[in-house]
Image 1 (cartoon, one colour):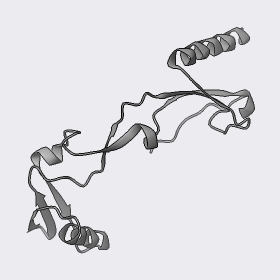
Image 2 (cartoon, rainbow, N blue to C red; image 1 turned 90 degrees about the vertical axis):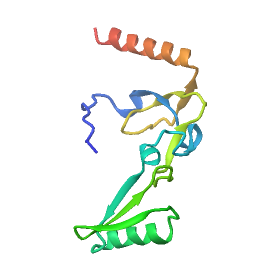
Image 3 (tube, rainbow, N blue to C red; image 1 turned 90 degrees about the horizontal axis):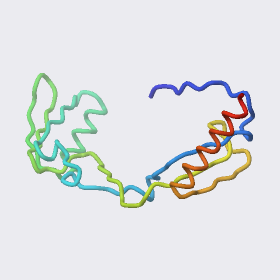
Image 4 (tube, one colour; image 1 turned 120 degrees about the vertical axis):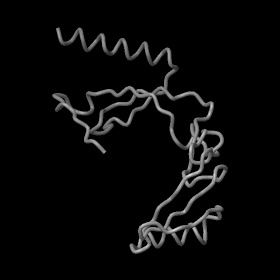
Length: 144
């Protein structure tokens, strides 16, 4: 993952405010089937190639053969094991889709360094936008 570049803040964290729009995984997402997400592997089939000479490859092959319960054909190519899964087979990816719950619009004290005041306010989208615009205006006026 690429590191985040941040400017050094001239103010302490307690002087900062963070505006965020969130859709938490636990409340705004659910598991989905391959068909629900138009999974290409499910629609067209796929191949999984493993090197059974490594411990990881041996574990992967054992999982596919003994635990996965997915119909497949098995072949060997250039010393590797190739598992071929036909179209319509549920893939190994755990798919997720958004629920119909609306995003949460939050205003939190602090910044990436923390929230020393421990405050957090949830707003309607309209109130969040208005508060954000007012806050930006106050910052612009203070910098003049």
